[in-house]
Amino acid sequence: MHADIIGGGLAGCEAAYALARQGIRVTIWEMRPDKQTPVHQGGDLAELVCSNSLKSEHSDTAQGLLKAEMTILGSLLLPCAQATRVPAGSALAVDRSRFSRMVTEQIEAHPLITVRREEITTIPQAPCIICTGPLTSAPLAKALQEISGAENLYFYDAVAPTVTRVSLDESIVYKASRYGKGSADYYNCPMTREEYLCFYEQLVAADALEPHAADREMVFEGCMPIEFIAQRGVDTLRFGPMRPVGLSPVEGGPRPYAVVQLRQEDKEGQLWGLVGFQTRLRWGEQDRVLRLIPGLKNAEFVRYGVMHRNTYINSPRCLSPDLQFTTRPGLFIAGQLTGVEGYMESAASGLWAGLCLARWMQGKKPLELPETTMLGALIKHISSAANAKFQPMNANFGLLPALPGKIKDKKQRNLAYMTRSLKHMHEFSELLQNTL
Image (spheres, rainbow, N blue to C red):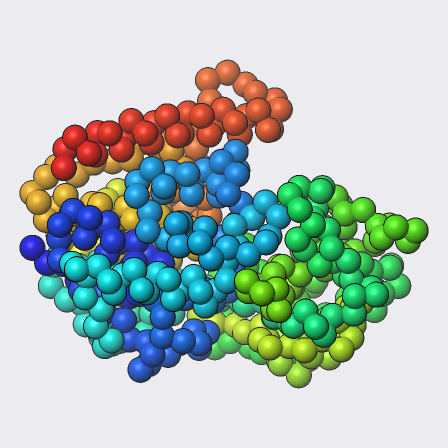
């Protein structure tokens, strides 16, 4: 038995590994490095482009719970992330280059997996999983649109800038984590009211790129560019990415009116990304406006923010709960193409698609994840959402069915969700193993 995986990102790697674990030979087709996207920089598989953070690993958070469920199901990427992690408080952040290199080495070393460096422009015959991501090439996107029978949706995503640590003014920036959670792993750039208002005025007046056919309603809320946020009101940033709550002032100094946080992006701590500062400003404007942030006056920008197109299909119309096209048996979709949003959500959908395709190839009855699990709830949402305008979705506790009884305390409620979800995922994993 043999299956094709189109796309060597997070979802593609998890899907290939899940299939290979079932004894199925897999070919991953990846167009990089011969043909690059606007945001990828290298040729390794599973390259992270928007951020180096995989978010919280605490299982009483939605992101942490999803990671715990993926571990139960046999994730490839999470052990690689643990082996290449960098300090980031309560979040799991990785050295990007080392992470993608380790994933690539493990995939290429697997005896049942072959990696082909070629672009695929047409839909292969089944069995196949397409997980080419939000930057799917135009020919393949057109082919997907024809198969889906519904118009592809799209939105614009943004990448935050990165600066070097040595260029930070450490007489101004200081290390701390919000609410003291974990170790003090973030650099913080505190602002007075006057500094904030100056920055705000320059930001809203700055020149920004206009993507082709840009439609603000199609920009995903979780990746909203800072200039979009700022245009909603003068204090919107202070209640968003620049919120000062949970951060103590520098000893002897005033409490910050607003704060910009920087998160470590490489193992050596030389590169730091501006947290929540996705932007579509022109690069010259980024250089000018972002230097108004205290501590960044002489910053060395090794990566400016960029805006790029994200493509995804109308999954509730097209996909069954196993992520298989309802009109094309044996053709599966995974990753951000399905309408999941986020690194781990994409990877988890690839893992699930791989498990489902293996069962389909083996002639076994498809299984459905319990909707009380985070992954099960996410898959149910993207395959059955009734919204007129289907939009990408992150893992969140709001997707889960209500708990019996009412728990007012949020932390206790999340712990109850976690306990129930992990119990049901362990039970599902045992069922899965018994039916292999």
